[in-house]
Image (cartoon, rainbow, N blue to C red):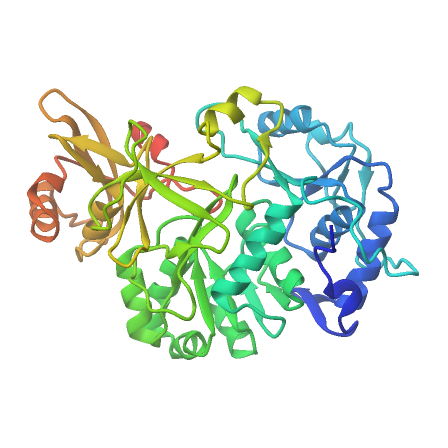
Length: 484
C-alpha cells in the first residue's frame, strides 16, 4: 500500500505539521522522529500508546503506522479494570508513554518506550508503508455500555478511504490549518484530528485543553478549520454574546465541523446568528469511521448529518429488515452501511463480529434516522436508548430534546423512555434548568413540546438535575440517567 502520509517524504520539510502549545514539529522533523520510532519496531505487531495531547503521541502513532504495526490508543483517564481488559485482549508488545508519566498498574509489566520528537533517523524513513490495505492500523476500544469494551480492528484502507472522502466533501487541502482540543484516544481526535491533516499535508494546532479563548486565538491567527463536539460548540454559543473577538474569528473560518453527537438546533442557530457561519455535521462510529457528512459546497439543513460519503453505501431498514424508502423526514429506520470505511472485526470476538453484520455485508449501526426529501440523513438516536415506542408511534428522542432546548428555562436536556402499562413506553425528560431556583414544570414543558412537534411526543415524566452525565467526548450517558 502507498504511504498513508506522502507529505512526510514528498512535501517541503520546513512546512509546519503539528503544534501542541509551545511545542511544534515541521514535516521534516516529524518524518525523522517517526522514522526513528519505526526503526525500533521492526518486529512489533501491536503497540499501545498512552494518548496524551502532546507531540510524542503523534510521533508514536505515525512511527508505528510507518513500521506496519497496529496502534492501540489508551485513554489516560481509564480505570485499572478497563485498562487491564484492553491490555489482556489486545496483547501489545510494548507501550509508548512520556518518560515523566507514572503509568497505572496494568501497564507496568509491559516494555516501555518513549517517542521523543527530537529523535532523528538519518534517512527520513521508508517512502512506502510495509503493510497492506487490509492490515490493521488501529485497534480502538468501544465504550462498553453492554459489557467489556470491544476492540474494533480498523484496517489501513479504512483510514485512507475515510480521510480522502472527507477531503472531497470538505474541500480539505494542504493549505488548511486545523484547530481542535479533542482527546487523542478516539477516532474523532486521532484519526480525523491528527492523521487527517497529515494525510493532506496540512497542519494541526492542538489546544491541549479546549477553551473558546483558545479557539478565537488560533482562528484569528491563521487556522482555517475547527473540529469540536457539541459540548464545545455549546460553550462557544454561550460565550459569543460577550466576546466580539470570538465572533469575528469564527466568521473568518473556512469550516466549522461538529461530531460525536448531535448538535442541538438552538446552538446551530445561535452560532449562525452571531457569526454568519454554519456548523456542519458528519456522522460516524468507531467501527465505520465516517459514513456521511454535510458537504462544504452545498446548502444544508441544521440538524442533518448530510449525505453518504464517496464510496459509502447507506440504507435505512425496519425491524424486520425491509428497506425504508421514504424520504419524508418522518419514517424512522435503523442505519446500515457498507463500504471501504468499515472495520474488519472485533478483536477476539467472532460472535460479536458476526452479529454486527447482515448476511450480505451491511453493518448494523444501531443508530436510528430518517431521510429528508433532499436525501440527507437526520439521526434521531440510538436504537437501544433513543427510540421510544409510545402509543403505537416510533419517536426519536433527539427531536424532543431539541424542542426542550428551545424553552428559555432549559439549559440542558435529555430524553429517554420508560415502561408504561398503557402506552408501552412513556417519554421521560431530564432537564438542567437555566435557573435552578425557578425550574420549569412538567405541564409547561409538555405543552411547549406538543405545540412544536405533536401531542404524542410530549414528556409524561420530568426530572430536574444539576448536570447531565457525560463521557470524555461530551456524549450524554443515558444509561446512567436511571440511576441519577
